[in-house]
Length: 305
Ligand SMILES: NC(=O)c1ccc[n+]([C@@H]2O[C@H](COP(=O)([O-])OP(=O)(O)OC[C@H]3O[C@@H](n4cnc5c(N)ncnc54)[C@H](O)[C@@H]3O)[C@@H](O)[C@H]2O)c1
Image (cartoon, rainbow, N blue to C red; front, top):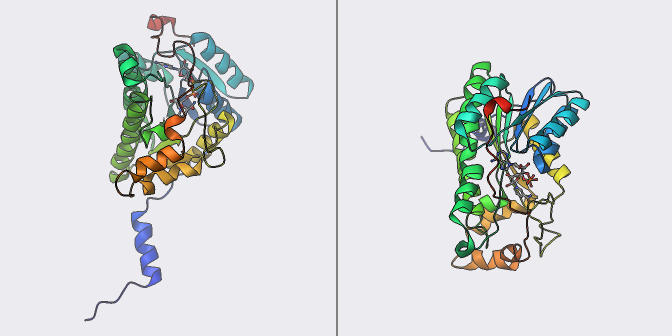
């Protein structure tokens, strides 16, 4: 029997069987937990979730006053806002807080820190802290909330990584490496969930620079292609992606060029990144003052509710 190429219809059916279905997750009536929600993108995602009709918005941050203020704002937008003062690197504290939180439909691993130091200028504490917050903390929260999501048959784990999780950047040996780890975490988790046929999804978010203050001083050489993003637009895009059941969000779309450019021979990929100005972006970086300072120690029973 001669072999025939599959008909277009059969090919489309075959493709549909391997391309996972998107599990939409409208936020209305749901519980949304956001770490690092005291400021920046996290704050805007928490408030955006409230505006989209989320029933409860759990605002986690190491900054108690900021968490309380955002929880109040979420409440004024129609959700029940609940503030929790927490250091996301404290795995037992995260597990206990997740227990207190009850049902969580969407958990956003958003808390992040950056040193902006060259390798030889970086401190051991700063490097460790960067990995603890950006790379390890998502494990502790995700492990705490995933069993409940599985049991209820719905949920989304969102990991706010970075475009620096897809390409190394000068003055980011700690940050970029920790975000590569976050991308690997979120993709591997998604693969595990898909393999099991789980309805829970893993969404990884990789934004270029965002004007929140975290990366104060950075510059872009190619604003038409790689603009500094507005935090409102990023927060909105993440919430849209959650509701649409997406698994990967690259912002702006030009960040998607990194993967095909890696197929270039020799040092051409590095040259392309230099032409785009990627390795000059951090030259005037100042960031916020003492961004990697550990939070003050607090007793769990003092957590703001
Ligand atoms: N701003 C950017 O240019 C940019 C670009 C790509 C990705 N990101 C990522 O987006 C996320 C949000 O960043 P942002 O720009 O809104 O920054 P931000 O500094 O405004 O917000 C980060 C929040 O995380 C909190 N936080 C830090 N360490 C914590 C800890 N141990 N426990 C609890 N909370 C902690 C901070 O208090 C702060 O409220 C981060 O993961 C960041 O790496 C930011």
